[in-house]
Image 1: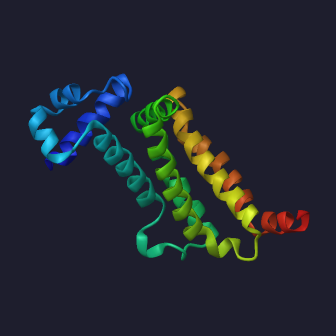
Image 2 (image 1 turned 180 degrees about the horizontal axis):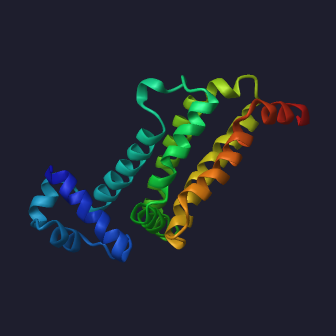
Length: 196
């Protein structure tokens, strides 16, 4: 394990246990069994650690959904399948607790709020690239609405997992599939175009 990974894993454990604000550099160092000086050789600040931790979480999610060389090449069925395969990962209690802690801190800390906004923008951009073929001919406003809904649905799974850790992933995946197919299906796209 690299020292960077060791620090990020320690930060993750601290944030899950105590929240972002209480996860001080000294606590992260103790959890990682490293000196403060050594941690500062790898990360300039606690904020840099939180950014790297959140970015790592985002990258992990995107790897569950698609690989970089597949962007823009997945059809709706393949995208839905990838999302459904990611449901157990999204429902992981520790990952969900980390997401909830970061979002709670974002409500209090403008720097963390900026970090969350940057990650959300990357998520939107990646989703737009993935689903662009399915959205061909749809108004920009409707595309943005569907992408925003996908972001909210994804975040809601993590928040649900942190408050309902005993939820059955199969049951949630079944409901999630219905919502995804309705959101992405050509029939719903046609209905949306007819409303405009």
